[in-house]
Amino acid sequence: MVRRRWLKAVTALAGSIGLVLGMVDVAGAAAAAHHKAATGKPIIIGAVIDETGTMKPFDQPAVEAAQLWAKKVNASGGVLGRPIKFKVFNDQLQPSLTRSDALKAIAQGASVLWTTCDVTFATPAIQVGLSHHMLVVSPCTGTNEMGPSRFGAPGKLAFSFGNAPTSDGAVLARLLMQKGWKSATVVTDKLLTYFVDVCQNFTTDFQKMGGKIVTQLTYTTGDHTVTQVAQKAASTGAAATVLCTTTTPTLPAFVTSERTLGNTKPIVGPWSIDGGFWEPKSATISNNIWWATYASVFGDDPNPQIRKLYGQMKSLGETPQTGGFVTGPTALQGIIAAIKRTHGTVKGPKLAAQMVKFHNVPTLSGPVSFSAKYHAVVGRPYRIVEVKNGKPHFVEMLSPGKYAGGA
Image 1: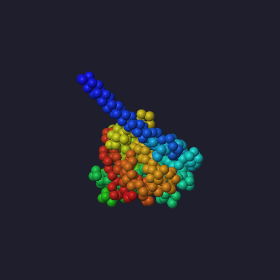
Image 2 (image 1 turned 90 degrees about the vertical axis):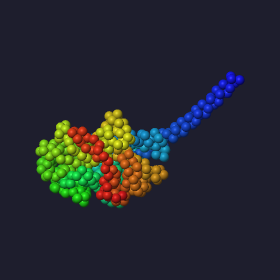
Image 3 (image 1 turned 120 degrees about the horizontal axis):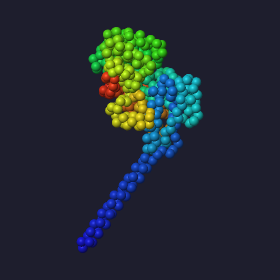
Image 4 (image 1 turned 180 degrees about the vertical axis):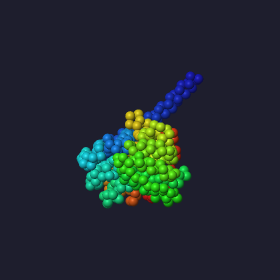
């Protein structure tokens, strides 16, 4: 009797194990089916960018991060069963090459055109894309000119996933007021429209918030006047210097000149001074420097997905120098969202008609909003980074608030 009861128990247990294993097999098969790699016709994105010149630090990390993101999307079934594929062209910022590369991308099947992060350099490619009625995106152009304001009615097809300069200016103004720095010297590098727009918006918003502009100074990268301008900025008596420029070659010279003259007050800039790679080695000189950016590249970003993606790029030997790398996956997420909203079409006018309706669409970089007025992102929160004794670190998230413009 005991033996029979034991056999029944073993038989029942075996049946239960078999049932469980069967359930695991079914669940595994379902998961495998759910994550089946995309096998449909590729959605080709033609990226006409700079991989060798001035825009390389902005363009290349963004497109490389986007390609990593595309691999993850493709491994999980793609976009409605279709894989994303990038074809990348190095235009070297040469207008004729920019135009011919855009035409090559279209000839090779591109449905969406992806451009460099400066609208002036990108214009030849943008015009080609618009004439072919394609959706044209830039991951990080920091101006609202990526749209109708520059290209008229055809510009309805063009968008940037960079922040609008209204947002950049507003967040810098909020940072100064929040820290109690109620007067500023504003220094504008006239090299790019982006720099001019950000400093203009900062000036307007800072004054609206009750701040005082002590003086406005300008130079252009390459005109060999940056040291003289820094000397003037150092002696104005303002609580902070707001500097709209790029990282090299002039930024280290400006910072060194101002600090050498004994001005240790805050130097504050937009994401174009992000990265810290440009800093002079002296911890005394590289101190009390602040910027607003898309992500921290110093291992302390509050978003674990961003830290993971940064780690993946670093392991591939493609370590991002600035937080702008997250705008690549963000732009791709936006393209995918528009395709899904149109139930699979890649026709430019239909994609643009959905994209212009974006309101707080979740992305890796934060909520993305567009409108008929703003074809660059407005209102997205920023990471504030401080350089203290030569070491940059994340401080806080800060929204540009009501002065950023409305979507």
